[in-house]
Image (cartoon, rainbow, N blue to C red):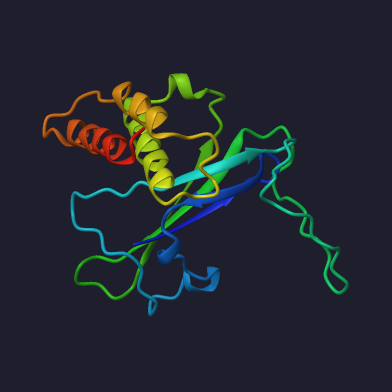
Length: 180
């Protein structure tokens, strides 16, 4: 399975994939069936979270780039005013296949805030926040173990296997170990 995300520059100033640093492929390898990516079993899912800075907002994480001498900057293919946020491409092979298949879809900006996000999304955000705290990521911002705990409590939702409750216990344990 390979995933390629292209953000619409009219909507997104900059972006950062959270996690998966060890799984990044060169853009040229997306169409190359000889380059393997991640294995995903039938019925399994993968979540990829991106931190985005909307167009028109400045990002501290993207320093300016000097103009190129021999190349012209690319012009966005999608004009301003479009509600297209990104194009998602997936390449996958059947278990016994050697040639990948391509699926492409456009994701539109629904202009909704975090408060209207699904419980699953909010839980995934809590997990990402906790991971950045544990790694002492420079991108963690103001995140704390307490904020991760509160975000998790607010997103427990349907938890038939108890994994979310177990995750909550991990954060509480990390708080006790850190003395916070």
